[in-house]
Image (cartoon, protein in one colour):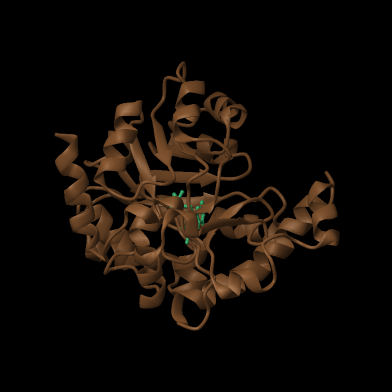
Length: 316
Ligand SMILES: Cc1cc2nc3c(=O)[nH]c(=O)nc-3n(C[C@H](O)[C@H](O)[C@H](O)COP(=O)(O)O)c2cc1C
């Protein structure tokens, strides 16, 4: 996965919340690759998009990437905004795009014109093969241990199903320490994408109670809820998460199963989720904490550089 710009094959996945410029820069500076989550950068951390990219460039001369979450169901305004973010990213010299949800065909076409590599988050084999046809350069295989929106199968099953795919496959989900990383490489993955491990770092701007909860949590403390985005997301089992139950009520559940209404249900949940999950970044009393099953192997809050150094040590 050298085509991403990383020296150590580690992507710090986009996170809402979690992807503050200081963390992105620290990961890239240490040899991995940090990814901008545009909504986090602008709405949560209050940077003008271009100025946010320039801040990262001031903090590191190393490459970083930008995520585009395509949301098929989003309104015209969101897609125009995403288009603008893409133009600015190109102008600011970004050479790696990470796309998620929806169809990235147009982004791939534009990226190719500018020598930009595109990896896409994929939840299963069918989407993975469609994305190979769409011309993406790499696939982030989201497995069932991941933080944020989860996949539905194990890392082992996923790579087994994609043995014939010729582009880099990245293990996204459940990597907590260097040993997990090494196992992923031994399975045949070209690298890993991590979110949870990087939340519990000194550079990440989330509350200390959120970071400590990751360190304290065991794998069994991670539960799935469909209330964040309509499909399963991994969260720590806290009082706030359990208060309203883990599953949507009958109306939203009906809408989620309905071909035409599904996108409205997901937009409703995401806009509600954004409010809860943005508060959790700054308020110790709000405990909507997304995290994956890698928590069991995360034992301390470290610098991003120390995390990357530990991982680099097992690649030689
Ligand atoms: C708090 C949190 C927020 C996330 N937000 C996003 C997001 O906005 N967009 C996205 O594509 N992935 C998001 N993810 C997924 C990560 O980019 C990454 O794929 C995932 O965290 C990998 O699993 P891990 O947490 O077990 O390392 C998020 C993950 C977490 C933990």
